[in-house]
Length: 71
Figure 1 (cartoon, rainbow, N blue to C red):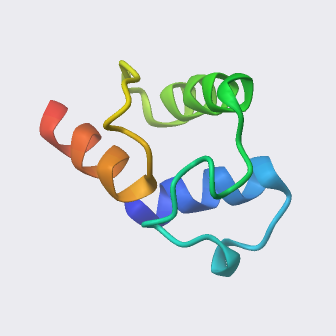
Figure 2 (cartoon, rainbow, N blue to C red; figure 1 turned 180 degrees about the vertical axis):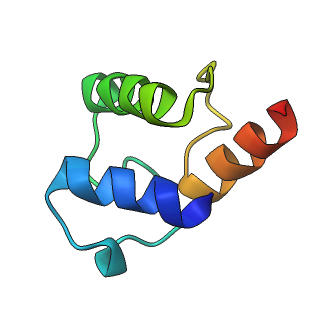
């Protein structure tokens, strides 16, 4: 799951997946609130999940945990 999320985010950012640290905040990755909203929609479409964003879901590790606990 983490690798898939990193791949989606890397593609969105136009970066190589190896450049994305899972514990970096979305802000650290250069994402603003609009970017995050667009990225969440893309993740939801690709993974078939629903994500309710909140301040606690501010990095990939936390997002992976949230998605895995949905199932």
